[in-house]
Length: 279
Image (cartoon, rainbow, N blue to C red):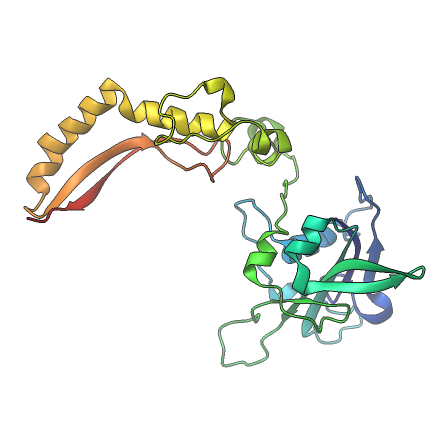
């Protein structure tokens, strides 16, 4: 499926009614071109609010995001952003079955997913919360079931910040531009198999997926002689004297992250943890 249309009301420079922003999209690549302060960033941020993103940057609604007319009228009390998804696959229809909208297009029934994101200003002066929690509504008029967290997670998008420092953004690392792109490609996610120590402790590395290779490397790292000796030294000479008889401190040395963290997420670490001992 793809976003076929976006409607934005009372968000930053976009007003409501005739001054609302409505933009249809076509499948494939879309480029937004315009002068500074024309609203390009507002459109992207509106999509980010509705879909949510996998990046580490947190996007919050601020009181200044609510539209204020140039005439000096009061700020709007409500922001409404609506995304319409069309050309749903069978898998899409199955995942969002209870949230779908059925439309008549050229005499045929078309299935679409319409998500309306609504944020309201808190008008109670006694409250410290300036913006109320947003709602994700479904249906042509926003009267369908609220889109739950599980369904929203299926819409989460990858957001790539503006490339102002190319050298830093393209370096290796979890937060790098390359890492964000690579970990979500079909080739990375669907090629090879994962590593399962219980089933195959010595797999053929060529058959493992990229994340499987990382898990296998972490396993080998933890089993190496140097790490084993270091772990024993930490336990015997440092942590044991600090432990209680039934509350032992144990060292764990390995590579951080799990198979869900993605490419570039693993870094060296060590930590101590408690191990309860019962008689």
